Each structure stands twice: as C-alpha cells, then as structure tokens.
Image (cartoon, rainbow, N blue to C red; front, side, top):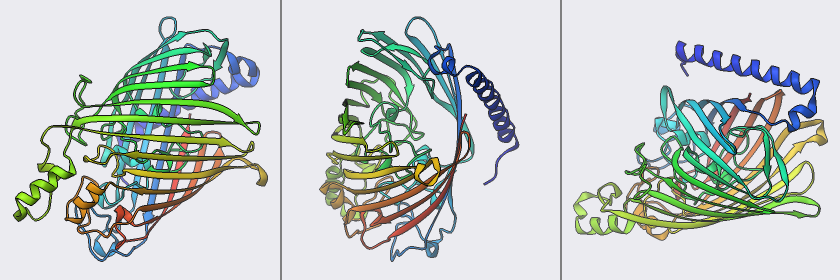
Length: 459
C-alpha cells in the first residue's frame, strides 16, 4: 500500500490533535472522575482510524466470470485485500435540545482482484466504501439533531461518537435530518454491529437481507425520527438511495428513490441481565430492474447470450422485507446475539445479494484469563437468494456483485472467529478468520478461507 505525503501529513495532524484533546480530557477525569461521568458538554470531538488486511487461500474454482467472480491464485488473483479509514467526529450544541454534527472521512482500499465481487456477504464490512487508490476524502455525515423532552425522569447520555454528553428526558422524541448512515439508527446490536471493532462479515454484523439506504461509500440523506418511551424505542425513517443503482448520485428529493423503514425495540431483563429485541420492516422504491424482466427480455432475444439486468431497467420498482434482531447478556463477560432477515428478492440489489439470512453468535470478554478488555467473537450465518435471482444466475446472468456463470445453487454459509486484544488505551489489534462455503451461492466453487488482521484506534 502506498500512502501519499499529504495524506501522512494530514493524518499526523489529526492524530496529534485528537491525542492532545484525549490526554487533556483524561487528566480532567483523573482529577475529578464525577465531573467527566455526568458533566454536560458543549462540544464532542473524537476520531478513529482502522486498517484491515486480509488474504485468502487458493480455493477450488473450476470456472469463473472475470467480472463478477471471486478469483483464486490460478486465475490471476494473488493480491491481498486491505482497507484504511480515518474519521473525525465533531459535534456542538446549538439551541435547547439541538445539536449539529459533522464527520470528515478518509478512505483507501482495494478488494481482491480490485473488484468488490464474488460473495453474497462480503468478508470486510469496510469494503462497502468501495475501491480507492490513492485515498479519497469526503464528508461522511453532516446532520442536525433535535431532541424534544417528554418527561419520565432524566438520564445521562455519555460522550461518544456523534453524541454530546448531557442529560435528556427518558421519554423523548428525537428528529435527525441530513447526511447520515442508515445503520447508525437501525439494526443496532451490542455484540455485533461494527466491523471496525467486532465481526467483519456483512451477514454477521448486520441483517444480510436488509436493503438499507446507502451510496457506494455507505452514507445516505434523509430524515429519521425516534420515540423513546420507557423500555420501548420506535424508529422510522425515509432515506435516499441512488437514482441509478450502486452509483453516488442520491435522490435528495426523497420522493422517487428511497427506502422507508420502521423499527420497534424493546429492552428487557432476563435472568437479571439486560437484553433487547428489535423488529424491522422496510420498503425500497427505486429505478431498478427486476430479474423476471431481465429473463423475459432474454427469452425474446436469446442471441444476447445471457440475461442482463443493466438493459432491463424499465422504471421504478419496489422491494420490501423485514428482520428480527436479538441480543442478550448472559453474564458480565458473555453475550449472545441472533438475527433473521428476509426480502422479496424480486429486483436487483442496492446493498447485498442476499434475500434471506439467519445468523447468530457469542461475544466473550477475557476476564477469566486476565485480559478483561480483550474480546473473543464466534459467529455463523446462512444466506440465500430468491427463486427469481437463482433462475437469472443459472441462465448465466450477473448482478453488480455476483454471477459465476451457470451456478449449482446452495446457500452461502459463513463462519467467523476473531480475537480483539487491547494494546494501549484506545488501540486494539484483532486477528480474524472466516470460512465461507458456497461463495456466491455456487456449490461448484470454494470453500474459501480468509485470514485477516485489523488495527483500530479510538480517540
């Protein structure tokens, strides 16, 4: 990986500034811990940087499509895959209950073979930001948040990423408008939600079949409302998706190309330990091709060789789905999670080629071996696609992400294990292993083994 001198210079400035702020804040906390625990703040400034590098084995692959297949070494792919991101999170209070947030981000990365293709659920969640060499710089988030108190007593919201420390009514209405990330609000899970610190595989750290709104860098634009009422949280949002699938140009009108979603969360105690259950429904409306239209077009023009969704986009289509998301703490060091998600799978994807997915796993802190800040994670996922997409792929069609040629369909299966070790304050190193059977739903190829290393720092 080659980093430019300007990037290194800017990264040093960013890290130096954040380290200074972090050291000053820590000295205040050391002198007066209660002040930092429950003292309202005017500003919130944080940063993160994450580097992930992965390598795969020379897996079985008797045939392939050079544009949409994951390649092995014999087919010319001997390179590793990596991603590097750095984000500056800044927030400030405006008037009563109002906050303004801005995130500047840098990203550099390369998928295997230089293309993000060949899997239903990709092995590195940071690759949702695409392939960029050299690094690119952009606004990740820029939004305003208004909180309206509804009583019920008060609770303290601790300082964090895009969260200013302060008190808020336990029962409240929160409105957010601007450039955001869908998964900052929906499909949350304590034990599996962040590829920068937890599981890396898409089907394990998120609902695989949730067609969430995002541009190719994983961000979107729109409105999210949240209603907190005792042990319940209701969230709803309309968020923009690209006017042409998998491109950067979002529909900022929120009138034609968008995803609507509603999620209900209930927090509970079981065996004296906290847990939560979330139920999500969503509908996506966009200028997309349906698999059946592509097949019909192919049957009318068989000389084209195979059906093609890129020539079968005839207007606005809708796709809908749902998901259930569970988490439960078992002891102070052990937590479990599970997800089930499904979508109609009738149209091309805006996120992943997944129409149904079930996943689950366990997260274990290292207290029993004297490393209380270390974490072991074990996760498993099984994903499938719709009958319409299976038919399309078996006729030789390809999507933006998958299509080996005539496939022998089997559900894609993922096993992932990681060990995250705290090295110093906010600096963590993680070793990660993934086993993926039937990559891109093709039993004729794979299994694929991935080994990876992640370095992450929070400031």
